[in-house]
Image (cartoon, rainbow, N blue to C red; front, side, top):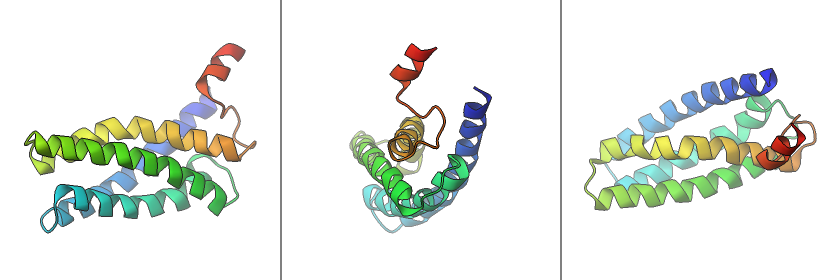
Length: 139
């Protein structure tokens, strides 16, 4: 359990750094582009950060691009959900500088579990990285 808490701490640290950098990109780009385009471009930058940093720093596994690619696929799925939320909030006339924070709240948890599952599928090194249902039945 202590290892899992440390992993979550590393995820929150790396995720916060990634979020702050991509949030700055979004806030800059939303003055030029629509919220959806700004969101997509900011996510592409964040995706590169995630694919490079998360396997080694957050999950402490090696293997480079295969694991980074698996995380990138998980994040792409979360991106689609976030993009749909951005469009929904835009249609509901939620201010475009506020909507990103609402989307962030929805996608952060999805991103952690999606990337953890992606790493688990590509690595036997990640101790305890199995779907939650299996972990609960072993306890």
